Length: 198
Length: 198
DNA sequence: TTCAATTTGACCGACTAACGGTCAAAAATT
DNA sequence: AATTTTTGACCGTTAGTCGGTCAAATTGAA
Image 1 (cartoon, rainbow over the protein chains, first blue to last red):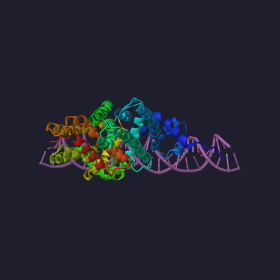
Image 2 (tube, chains in turn yellow, red, brown, purple):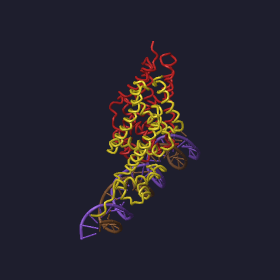
Image 3 (cartoon, rainbow over the protein chains, first blue to last red):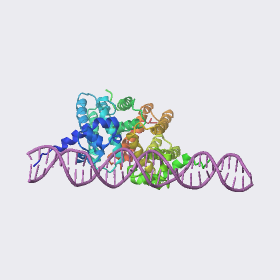
Image 4 (cartoon, each protein chain N blue to C red):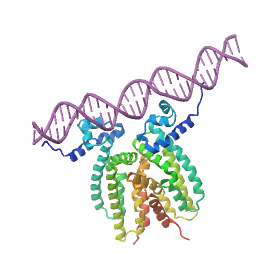
């Protein structure tokens, strides 16, 4: 037997090594040869670990989202009210510390829209599903504890997707600057209506 | 002097001639040569009218959105309540008659996300701005006429973007089927809360 | 008025540079 | 020696360019 490399880990390593150039130039201004160089491997090796150029972005999105998910979990623990928890959730779209993830996410969404039948999308479907269940459970808790009117649950899917909507609209029209204000304004308005006053 | 063609019109004609193959195969599975053939022009001519392959999609989006805007205007005239008007607005995301526009819009958004600094995006910023002002004015009318609580206006940007959010999420995760239900459910919930009862 | 010379814009497709992806051979490891 | 891993030269394809062709329009001399 010859050496067995940890293929899963090496795939992650290569993807992470490509993060900086992808953020700097964008995937479509980057050649596979350049990515390979960034990762200190030959071009052929890239195809040992990724089926296509695009899959590097999918892998990166996966890694960064798992990381984000951990950070978010801890952050939410420190928050008392449902309103604050939901705001923490929507931090994804404007907090400076998630900048890199957002940029990768943007490229991921673009690639996903262009390659609708790609099997790599399945992970994202599951990943989104998990985030949404989580989001919904936060609202449900608020309802259960008597802080929120139960009809907020009918808005959960809308509230969950609004971040994507604002984020993508803002990205496409180059008006990303006041995204935080818009998001928080929206959340506050909903909660002002839905919170049960003592 | 030689023959003078209407460059603006011919650009539209070429773009429209490419609509079918773009819808069928998607831009990235289509070569410029194939597009040129669809439009019955030489490949070089394509570059007389478009700066890049991508610009054909931008032009198509522009054309179809102007068309949609007309249809929508008439449709809204036939609706009595603000709720119905807003639903008509969000038809964009699920009504069968806008299928082609949606597909082109999806490709447009993807390209816009990948080419963030593209000057061609400016038209879209303006186009979106106009749609949003329109959307907002519908809500404002509802408030003015005493049908809606005025705090619905704080939700207008969120309500406007939710379509994009749901649409793109659904596209990426291949769950486009029940988009109408989700959208209408969201709109109904908001209006049930915000409508002033007699 | 006629018509040939001239000018001009529209059109084109052969060509080029560059890229994504492949594969046979080499290197590395045990 | 056997087997896995790595590699970069190679290949086919494609976006975009560029020099040239052509037909219509203009000019102006007869």
